[in-house]
Length: 604
Image (tube, rainbow, N blue to C red):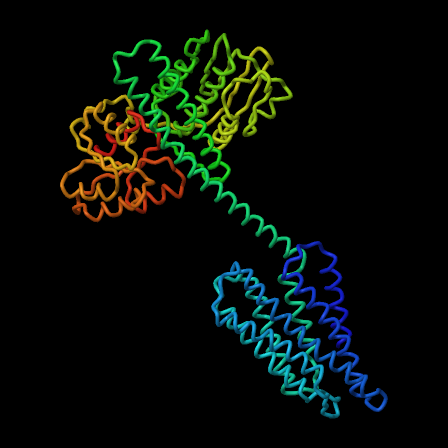
């Protein structure tokens, strides 16, 4: 039996040590365990012969072999205990243990050392019987004390950390405990059966098959690496959210104040208007870069969703035309619209993301075209089952792209032909994001170009048919919000000033508060139609303020609360929902954004 166990373990040892794996604490313990068990099995076989042939073998040789046999048995059992303890530590991320738990582990370690010394020094005593002689002395007592001591602590540790341990590892540990308990009971009942070596071998095989074979370790390593990547991605998302908020707060002041100056000042000369317009355009460009970073982060995390809603195609294309004409400015470029007459007046799709793609493609065309024309072509390919397959094309007469560079156009943070592009603004993210968005819509963004002459980006996507009544008329005036009373909460004076000025332009009465606590007190003395609150504030955040404000509102008279935020991550939006915040506006805030969301919630 010992020979069979040795051969099985030798095979496992060969496979185990020949496989490449990280030299972790668990690996080192299991390696020592295999070696210790191999030595134990060898001396198990030797002592079976010597103890039954005491008349032929010198007593000193028999006693030495027997002490090594029992000593390696205790060492192997202790290594099993250590392996399980370290595995549980790893599964629980080395969480802090109690003083009592740490004391017990130290006591067990000390006990093991003392027990090994006793086994090596104690006299060897045998019981003779027809089936063969066996140990009945001090060494046997030490083993029988050690096994329940180790097992009890393992069982206690499993119960204490049960929910943290992976099911497969729990199964392996439980199987090993069952094998050890059965082996110990059988040996105690009939010590002449000598099956301790078989039991330890089965335990080693159990751990190897379930946890330590190369395939299992590879799967576990992949799982660990995936977890690391997810943590890095989560950290990156948090970093982007924080940076987004910190940048958007001052950008709110820059863009907001510039917009107010341009809209309210009537005594500005042409040069001043030009300077202010340049400041506003640069601010808008910085916000666009920031939006691209957030979009890229969401796309990489797989958290981007396409939301289909009804929209007016006339208003959609007119909006794009106005933006691009403003971007063209004084450049000698003609903007050509070739829109198929069969395009329905109302469609159902993610107009916001489609608009983002087309504006990005046309902005690129303006950026890389010094003269000539930019042509937007939109055609219905076919329609069936209330769905329209529509092709979009943006073609310019700009510098073009070399054939060898075409494949790199949709890579993030990449600009081709850097020498010719010197001085051209942009991060190289726009085309990558556009390609991903079109892919999410079921299409594919493609490109064709003749270097030095023209470039064309084109794609085909499906859009649904929408009923007339479903489409929102975005040209409605904001007359109905005049005279309402709003409360704006923000810890930054300049943001409060911008909000006051915008609401004054809209004919809205606006009160302001510099903290959540001040705002709560104002709710007692005044009645408001809608509340706007900054998200990140000292002492009391926007979400904390919203929770407290809801407590003071009369039942059935809940006031809409809108967050003013630079952080529009999924975590932030979930926090808004939990706090009872109805909606949010992303900074920087302009007149149209504030007016539109105010009107929407006042109507509700």
